[in-house]
Length: 397
Image (cartoon, rainbow, N blue to C red; front, top):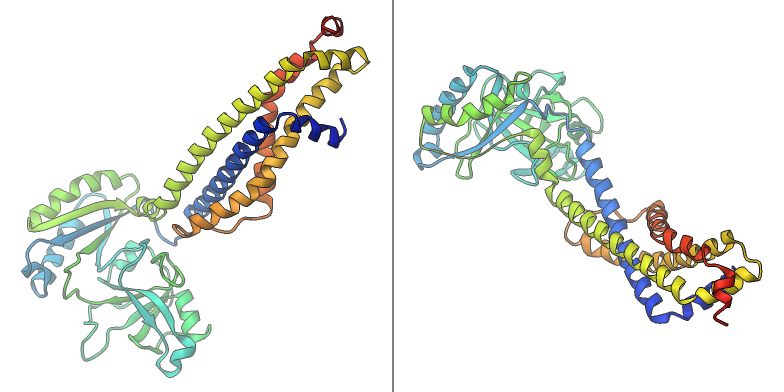
């Protein structure tokens, strides 16, 4: 059927067609953005972190008494905790840290070359104060220099040596050797491989680490443990009792694998993608029901017209194609309007979470899915139309 005749056919059902177009546009917008969010979340979860996610446990805890939160009582507590955990079956290495990796935000600051501050400054760099086994726990390869083995106070007379990640070294020193040079936080002792620090940082792989004692933990601290393969769950279950036996004056906030921590890091995107996917599925189902109803009642109402076409020589295939074409045209028009709705929804979501802008191929993919669903929904009514007998239809004339 020519395009202008399809438009005329739709105009005869203005109210029904308008409502269906609005429904299809909303479905298109939801479906497109849910696909976009699902794709982004999948990419984020699959990006390399440089960390042994499954075999590393992070324990977040805080002493409940003021004395234990301050040095030297804090130092003694940490020593006893580390010694007790090292004796646990299945534990390979353990270290303390003022904060763990894979966080939304945390303790951070700028790192730069004092001789060229403005040109070399990296802002929002996570600052870790750790024990010497931190690098062993996270299995961070040393790319240059030697790792510090002794704890040196960060604010002491002699500055604590700094270990920085490769990407941060390249930023501060323009891809030149960093070991032995100074940054504003101390001399660079070593460069290690990149790992995921904080999501809110300028670059997630910028990290600065210093082997130093913790002097105050009013906001708590982290214990990081690497376990043998297959021992993670057993170690996790035994940890609370072991830590309570060392000193009961502690509050354990959580014990998670780094894999679980990574999932939580993107929980907003994952939750919203799941919600939008559910809404999209429901809207698709409603759109399919609406398309089915529209095609079915159109077939019943125009039996005489279809019968006349059949009597004049129209084939079953042509009748079938005409009915499907009407629904395809409605879907394409709804999808066209849905592009505008999708852009608006994308901008609204961008104010709440980090979401990429729409790619050119996403509307095509979404329109294809919508067309497929509408085709499935209208297939049966179109098949019914092909069964209308020319003789039966013309008897009503």
